Image (cartoon, rainbow, N blue to C red; front, side):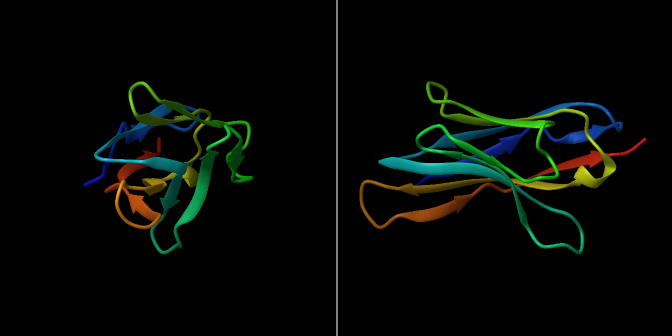
Length: 120
């Protein structure tokens, strides 16, 4: 069974920084891409950043230049470095992976979410 466990959320003042982590464990054959999504109250879940298997990245326009997605394959951990945080970044952040286990079809898996609150 695959597990994605996020950590690193919290309360930060505007202009501050946080680093989210997503530890991936379980029996995995291939990870095609991973990313971070967020969902603010009353809004739909949206893509924040995506890391593709070839190393290319995609970012939401609202976070370009402020957020950086990266992965430590040795530690099986995905990161999201968030700088110059704004109140509009307040949301629950979810780790996502599109992957394939040794048995079965390719599928999407999600973490449980971690709250990020940007407020003075």
